[in-house]
Length: 153
Image (cartoon, rainbow, N blue to C red):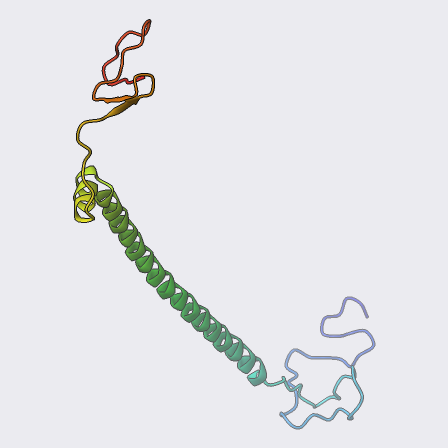
């Protein structure tokens, strides 16, 4: 009947004071899925332990992965720092060598080194005049060319 509370169509009448039977073992037949337990059987919830172990395992694995990644990155950072220090040392050595080369190429050092090797500065310049067949101390002036200081034709 439709309007009566406490009744389900096609089912036994239910009263608001009806209580389920005492808890007991599940009475469903093995191998029958989707069947409802009979009256008086209590539905048993599956255990949450495997789910908890799965979550704890995932969190533990994630933390271990983070630890491993952090360790690898720290090792790389130490190596980068070491290479940068070596780069600075090599740059300083390069500057020192360039300064030494610049010092060795200076005219005063070259003159001192030449003197150590037995080289001497030439005295007066002598010019050979093939037309006159003689050696002169001063170059001959050519007609039409004005004398320019430091220029010898």
